[in-house]
Length: 440
Image 1 (cartoon, rainbow, N blue to C red):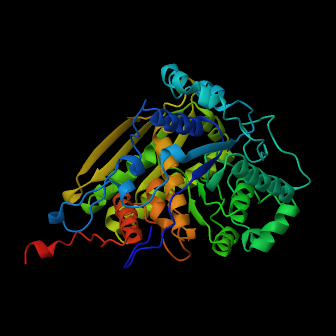
Image 2: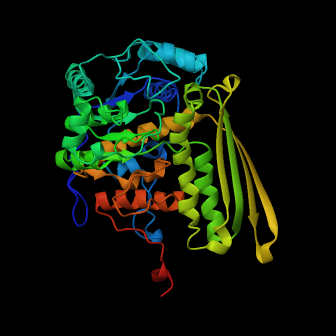
Image 3: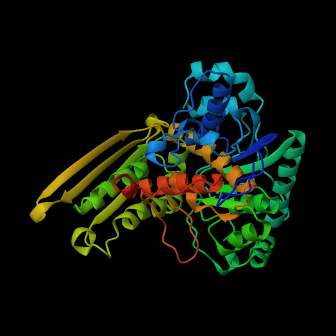
């Protein structure tokens, strides 16, 4: 597809697209089962912008509102091939049954397909995810050797499945909290740290490094420190590969990025926002470990402060108290419940309250994000858009941005940025919503 004007030269979405998922738990199996159900005409892709959303082109009076997938060349669902790694050896069907997200009547029609997806041995280290264990794991001389084994997996998967292109999404558990270390500064220092088994090189970094070395776009769906270090940004630029992160924006943070912009545009004040969650899936069990929770907490806390900008509006937000808690509660399974108590104030300082009780299904909300990220990252790659893909912040709790920029968390601004990027790729005019031309 050749675009004129300000558009990009985009290679066509021909042949098979391999979607490699790190982790074959609740999110991945829900994604895979959903896509296969849609391919068989058994379900609709609700929640997926790539499959259901439209995009306005030109003026409102032009009445041009095609589907996104008709404006930019996205891979077709029929061309997707799934692969995965997981330390637990269960195939996708057995894993889906164990996770309990989808009911049997939705799993049985695609059981044959799910049973065909067996996880490759994972790079897994219990030191980074203390609440999990598994037998389907790789062994190697050091972390560099393990990463080379992942590269071999990628090449083998591509060849055996006849894939023309690949993309990788981290859909595995949250690792312990890590801070940037000098070993993350350059590609060379990172690779030496891998050889030295440095503790600041987590398994997620090995997957990302392997993907980038193989020219495979990588999106991080967890809050781990992974591609958001200088070495990975350098490697992505060197090999001209797209990267995006981090942490799927699903339940409580999704609500915050919808509601907080509304409070701000009305200039309503905020005294406090208390958030607590209960969930009982594998993610909840992992987050029961304080070190993994610290990683998630950092991701969940950032959105509100960036949206409200207390340094610019001290009278409204300078003294707000923001607290986030997550509690592991096995009976709830994947059906997370998030409670929010929001203390706001308005004219003359009079207090008001908002209370939210969101009984959500984490993996149901995450699955369309996985699909969209895989397809949009593939589009970015074919459009020659390497490095950080900030336009995909719409899907993420803690968006990765270029050094020196603050992340944009307002979901409505993120949505506008995503669609304007698609217009730019397609060579269409940007939409500013100024609209003076209708009245002059």
